[in-house]
Length: 114
Length: 112
Image (cartoon, rainbow over all chains, first blue to last red; front, side):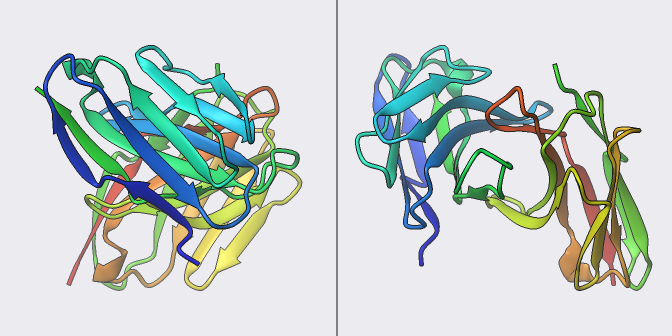
């Protein structure tokens, strides 16, 4: 099992450009999450999904959109990138919410917006 | 809002020492608490998961305890090794939320 994988690993954008980050998991998990990690801020939740076709906002959703068309994939989109979105993005997944089982994380995508 | 605090922010110890990392949280209504390890430039690796009904969990040289009523958890690392050098993150899962609330981490350096 590959676990949670993220594509791409690194990306540099110019302000105003758009891009999509892809997260895939092969553990048949229902719940998937996108976090961002910034120095001195810790990890913060951007969006999450409790199942195929459903998404919801987290703590810092502004400037991002997400889609979960397939159970194994969770996409994070930036429509018009801003320097404030320079960060490391982590995707995670878990089997269930009830009882809050262990979350598994991907290796991260390092994004720089110039 | 759940606040998670980790003390100390950084720690340097010589190889072989036993050490304790601390985590505190403001809202005791949690489902569980999870300890992670993060190596520089890498993702998060789950170390231990403690359910709210449990007092502690052990894995090899690691032991994590949970005192929900006081809002505290500790991660005990026995006989530390240079390979333990990493950032250790504590996170709690609340029933009222849908994801983990993270502390800012403790950066550990174990010197040979």
